[in-house]
Length: 302
Ligand SMILES: NC(=O)c1ccc[n+]([C@@H]2O[C@H](COP(=O)([O-])OP(=O)(O)OC[C@H]3O[C@@H](n4cnc5c(N)ncnc54)[C@H](OP(=O)(O)O)[C@@H]3O)[C@@H](O)[C@H]2O)c1
View 1 (cartoon, rainbow, N blue to C red):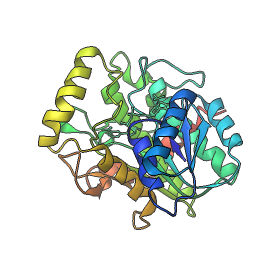
View 2: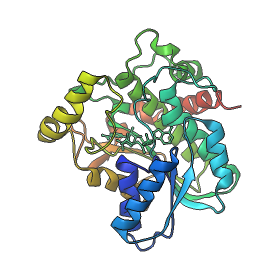
View 3: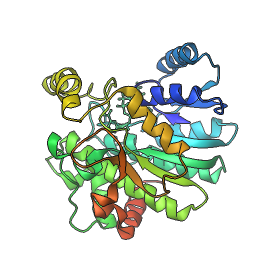
View 4: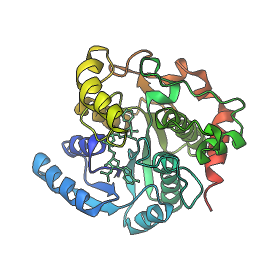
């Protein structure tokens, strides 16, 4: 199952997985039925396989996630938690669960999805969370390394409800801290569920996505049409959609990638071979922080 499978890296991951003969079925978990149908049709045409099934799920709405899991009639081998980004037009607004939209889309919905799948015994093998190099900071893009003072449950709770950022809610910075929280949650899940592999993986800087569409006009033009396609490849900061998606395919297929770990690009670049990220940012290995992030996000689930 791939969340956010109708566009960008999610859709390309579905395409690459379908080209593997051992893939029997792919659930496209999408929020918009029309976009999902169009993606299904184009995936069937490009792969020559009719193995795609649409599951309507808006990951920013926990009721929709629960409904999607109930509609799933069989267990899945692999879950790719791909839906995400900088949180739409109003990333700082709170959902009915009390988290910001940016937290709901990247994290809370996926936490509920995994919990519901596990309770229903519908997740068998591996779960992959789409993290980002932003979770350990990207100096060249001005994205700071997450800098929490205590990393307590309360502090993570404030990150997830937005109060941590006060009037300084810059989605590009907040995004990295949310992905950091999600990556810590995944490591905690790995310890609690030793029979399932929990991997966090960044696709790297990836072109050809909808990623910058919600940014203000000037930033959008700068990133999407000038930075991403022209300057960033030269600086090792962006690669093709197929390379980005291949990281997710490898993440669920390669058993040598260790449960509880976070893989992304080497320091200073957003492309090339992946490395385990606690070698760059040791906080990622801190079990107390992992448990605190896990507990904090669960405070929003009732
Ligand atoms: N591209 C990069 O350089 C990069 C780098 C590091 C990490 N990532 C991460 O990789 C993942 C995929 O990124 P991308 O660049 O492929 O993004 P994208 O092109 O913006 O595509 C995001 C997909 O997620 C879906 N989605 C968004 N909110 C959703 C919701 N509430 N419920 C269900 N689906 C939802 C979108 O559906 P709609 O069409 O309906 O909006 C779309 O299908 C994200 O988690 C992103 O943070 C990307």
